[in-house]
Image (cartoon, rainbow, N blue to C red; front, side, top):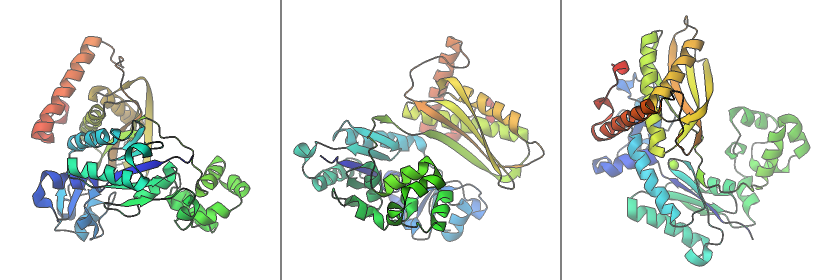
Length: 388
Ligand SMILES: [Mg+2]
């Protein structure tokens, strides 16, 4: 029996939530991300509505470029707390279809619906029910892809966005993938994509026909993996639990900085944001990573793995700051700085670095209070002494 896997992906989620909360934005180009500062901003776009995409704006684009393409756009800073809240509601709706659900980001999940057909109908009917449930309860649209494995479902959900519904019938997976560019396969980054191109393997179909032994010679284990996936072989299970790999925040400076005080302040702000996201998702991270980009764009990351997972700003900041102080080449100015937590688990409460339990409880209480106030009054309402 082939499996029935669905991939559900919300349509330009952050922008859609902004429109939901402020209907006057409907039909307008909404761009969520860094402040464009009249074209001088140096951060990046994290999401763009379809109206903004018509101007060529897309996520991960420098916000200055977005501003040049679409100066009339509505630029918003983004509200992670609100997105997480809606995300929780979406996942609750999806759990009404099957407990076999794997959330892979704030707005995406896989569902293993094998054996649910008697309950909910044929695949197309189930997909419609999922879309309708989300639409009617949250007034947001989702795109759904379905197939016999995760790879096919994920690629299918992207094909007819927004409000898409694509079902790949069992037995047609290989043909479905054949004409897609090889870069659509998981694990194919820009470097691998270039290498595949040089080898004349631009489509998944060409990759599927290629000699697997030669792929293995060139790419090692990855070659075998790619050959299997290109042949639509993906037995990866839908694993329950939260699968987000990391949570991070970055800041691009308006002007490259060599000020240690500035950077320390920013590390605290970023650590607080990362801590707030972890708590909003109910997870803790064991590995804290610092990202440094120098003015010439050379980028370094430094990580530290802890005995126990953490979700509070003080501990995250302490590690990020230690990594920074240890690794910064002080004669070089910094363009971008980032803090992230990975190695996430669903936080059992263990004592962390600062293992005075009373102090820890106090830190947690303080962090929660800060979250609540910020949720209500906005980010700028509360600042810690170090951020001033
Ligand atoms: Mg999405």
